[in-house]
Image 1: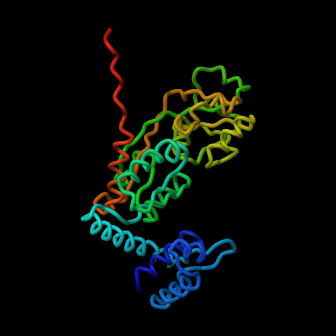
Image 2 (image 1 turned 180 degrees about the vertical axis):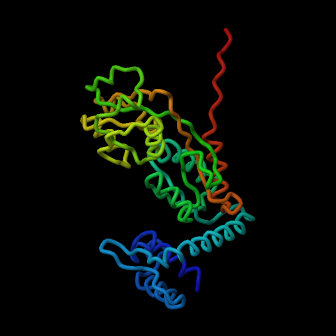
Image 3 (image 1 turned 60 degrees about the vertical axis):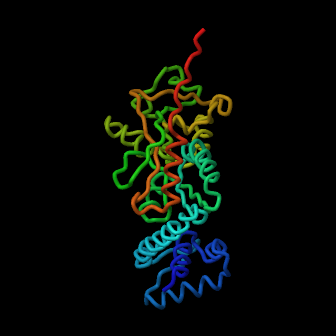
Length: 302
């Protein structure tokens, strides 16, 4: 068994095929296929099964995959520890991100600072629903990921607090209200975001004993905005997930604060800070510094 075989297996499982995995590693497809077959022969189990659209791990393959990622992550951390003696000049950092708040508002600034300090680190960013990102962290598919806090399963770094906003079509009677209660949104088609606020939104309704008419579950914010803009439903999303000039891009939408005020906190998470790679630890430090609230400017004294 070799690290290369484990890496090929992990990439085939993640990317769903030999071609994509071989391309990521810069090797031929046949070489990737032979390496996986050799690993299966040594372990005496079938690790991958063929599905109509992609290759997926078998039941035993899922168990082996978790162990393989643990081994690969420790090996990567070991290589980075050694490289750090000379200034952390090489290695890989895998980041999980969801929705506009993390992918648009937070990640670009953090990455710019990180790349400036550590240009030799190769960075991969996987984007998915908030539940997918937490699963990737648990499975070791990513080294660090954006999550909604608190989350006791991980070691976390808080970054940003924002407020939930109700979105209604401009022609809706609620567009005249200064704030909107969850009860006001009952009885109309509801569009549930899957991009970072879904559990918070659902728990808010549940705590009040309310059952919204969820017609759509959507992970892309641009789709939610387009649907509300066309009058197809209402929604609740995080304020920082919205475009800075909502009215300029979507004149048919009105955003109002939720009543009572409901906030969420976004942060970065790793499975274990003690076992995190040097690159991941540096990324957390930079993120905390970049996202630290700026002190208010002092007024000049006349």
